Length: 266
Image 1: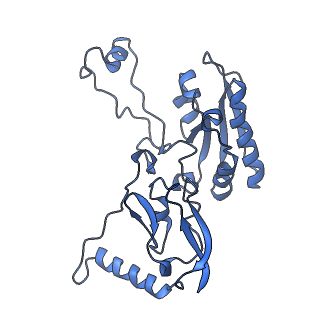
Image 2 (image 1 turned 60 degrees about the vertical axis):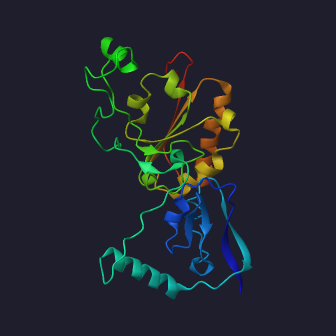
C-alpha cells in the first residue's frame, strides 16, 4: 500500500540515537553508527522521531510500505517487558545503543540547576601536578568552583528540540565568546538555567527555526540572551526575538551584552 512513512538521510544523521529513543514502536534502530528504519510495519507514520532529530535527517515520504501493524508492535513490547521482568526463559534486555559521536550524546549532568553547588571534578588540595593549571590556581588562592552546566550537548546545532531537560526550564542562550570574556559566566548567568550556545557568524545558520521549535514545543519559563558587544553577535539576539514571536507564546526575556574587556554593558 502507498502510505506516509519516515525516511532517514544517513548523510545528515550524526548517530546521536535520539530518534531511536523517541520511537515508541521500536521501528528505528542504530546500525553501524547511523539511524535506520528497521521495519516498515512498526512505523505508525505519526513522526514522534522528527522533532527528536537535531540535524533534520528525518522526513516524511509517501511510498509503497507495509501497513502499520499495531498488534505486532504490542506483542514486541509485551515480550520485551516479560524479558525485563524475568519471565519464562528470560533473555537479557539489550542495553541502549549509542554508536555516534560522544560529543552529541544527550545527557543530564550532575551539576543540575536544582542541586547545591559542589566542587566535583576539581583537584583535591595537594594532589595537582606541579606546574599544572590546578596547582597555579591553588597557589594564587583561587578556590575551585563547580560548573553550572546542567546538560549536554549545549551547542544549539546539536541539542535535540524535545530534550526532557527543557520541561519547565529557564533558558540561557549565549554567544560562545561570552564565557571567555565574562569571568563569572557560570555564577551570574548559567546557574539554574539550561544553557545553549552558538555563534551565528561561525555556524553560518539562522538559529530562529530551531529555537522556535524548542520554545513552542516545551514548557520554557523564561529566556535570557547573553551576547557580545560586536555587531555580528546581533544575529543571535535577532534569532531569539524571531523565535519568541513565531512560537506564539508570551515568555519573559532579557538581553545582557558583554564588552570585549569583560564588563556587563546592559
